[in-house]
Image (cartoon, rainbow, N blue to C red):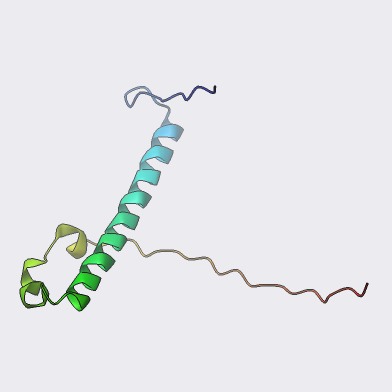
Amino acid sequence: MSEVIWDHIHEMSLDHALNSFDQRDANINKQKRSATRDVQSCLDNNPNVAVHKTLFQFDFITEEVEKQVVESIEESRTPNKPR
């Protein structure tokens, strides 16, 4: 069984601290985007809440969220080799 080592927040190295908080920041931004999409979908598609749209004001919607970076990978095709 492998052992997982966790650095204590008050003792971790600078590199580990920066990586750790950078990952948390990215996860928080992903959760904000997801929650914003869920609220918008609810408002657009749920007739039970449609008349109460003004009640759906949450901090995660009004806060600036980093744009999601999507990498495009072009597909390369190689001709089939004859057998």
